[in-house]
Length: 291
Length: 156
Image 1 (tube, each protein chain N blue to C red):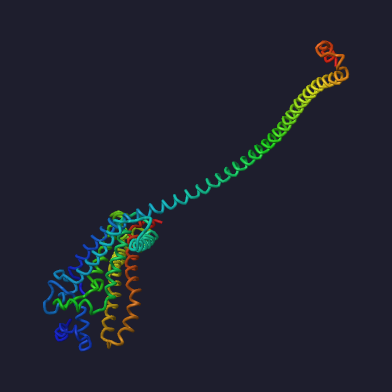
Image 2 (cartoon, rainbow over the protein chains, first blue to last red):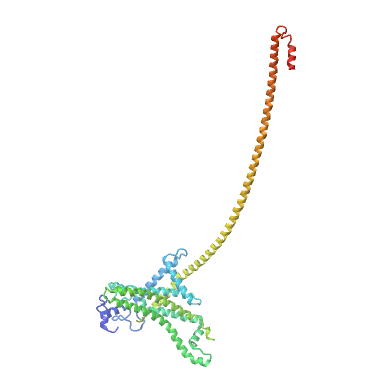
């Protein structure tokens, strides 16, 4: 992102990986963007809302569309007596997710189950893009004149933060719905340090507010950064393996891909599980603060 | 490693996806699975009921068979008795018939005997007349003594 020679080399690095490893990797980590700097192909800063990462959007929307298509087809022709292959698969996943949600989320809600299922399946599909050979889709895209293509949407912080902030807004909504606005404010002021003396209570309030604020903000950040970190690191290791001589790549690449099957499933599951846990915490009314 | 406007797009996609999956997959599928659970439970209960009913039916059937067997035995015994009676009756009838035939035969025999006797008597008379006529050819005229001879025949 700094060295102009590296950037310049990046434009031509797709073919010869080992000539300039840094450029090769940087090229693979650059989004196909709209509204970004035409030279560097990077957003101007950590937060740049004038830029759209087209590849992230296209692939995530395509996968969402695939998910919708399958859901629609299966959901339309549900057969309780003779479930077909795809229906069996979705039933197993749905029952698994429903079991997890029911054991964690005790309050009454119609949104948590479908949301958990959506997170699990969608994140899993987006993670699965990581298993495609790193050069396959970028190479195909380069034939059509598309210079940059980053195929795994979950290696984009925008995606993981998008999911995490969606969950976070639902957390705030649940806090207000189940605790009431007053209860929500009380949670910030009188939690986690509690006191019976009113004077001490007031004294502790700023500390409590800071603590709770950090605690609450840590939730979306941990969700987003965990998924991003795992997927980004996985992608990076695939890129590093791609730098090896072609005849040895299958050993490390195969091993890492097999291990990565576990990682992509686990990360999708963890995102779903933690979202459900956070929502269940938000849905608990704090009656236990007056003991 | 930047957060861009893509974030907004991803949040929108996520919201639409959650709505869609809830509407077209989660809702119908959970309802279908609930229905299926209920149907399986109902089916098991019905099977239990059916088994119970079958047991009852089997017991009833056994009773029926037992009854039928008893009745059949009774009927067979009755039939046997009746057959014996019929045989006895037939024997009796045969004996009576025999008796009757014998009696009529006897009567016929008696009649024949009488008839033979009658005939013999006539022949004896004619023979004695012939003999006597041979002895008395000259003295006795048939026409003259017819009256006498007739009287004689009647006396024999």
